[in-house]
Amino acid sequence: MQCNMEIVVGDRMAPEAQMIVLFAFLHHLAAFTLVAAIALEFVLLRGELTIWNARRLQVADMVLGTAATILLLVGLARVFWFEKDATYYFHNHAFLTKFALFILMALLSIVPTIEFLSWRKAVEAGQVPVVAAAKLKRVRMIVHIELAAIVLILLFAAMMAKGGWV
Ligand code: HEM
Image (cartoon, rainbow, N blue to C red):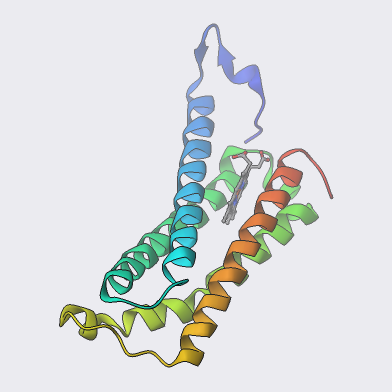
């Protein structure tokens, strides 16, 4: 489906245009939620690990996983149905780089997720999870990398939307 503004009929939006707006909105909502969840994890991991932090890290990670899944589904729907033609995106280096970064981020995020899930028993028992310093350091590093990847994804998103780096 081509995205152009001839889809405004009179002073009302055609159903096609409404879908484009709806999917763009969902994309933004999921993207902002994902960024907020990663930023929260980053802040919570900075200090000493407490039961309070551990609980919030688990919730933030669940939100992150849900937002990433929605973002992927909505993003793919935009690629195939609600924006420029899919061939445009698959021939656009900015999109391919953005997509590769997203997949890399998703794969990396498996490590913190497994770690936070392994804290379940301790947290339910009201105890601070016992985590080796090296493990915690690795989780912090991954969350750092995820934040950096987000900045790059935003750059490539702007480039692909405006027809850059084809
Ligand atoms: C952390 C992940 C992501 C962030 C922060 C992000 C952010 C953005 C931003 C800021 C835009 C430009 C505004 C707009 O048109 O909505 C955009 C557009 C778009 N994104 Fe994403 N995005 C992410 C993931 C994805 C993924 C995984 C896909 C596809 C599988 C995707 C597909 C698209 C498409 C098709 C557009 C419309 C571009 C156009 O106007 O031609 N995005 N994204």
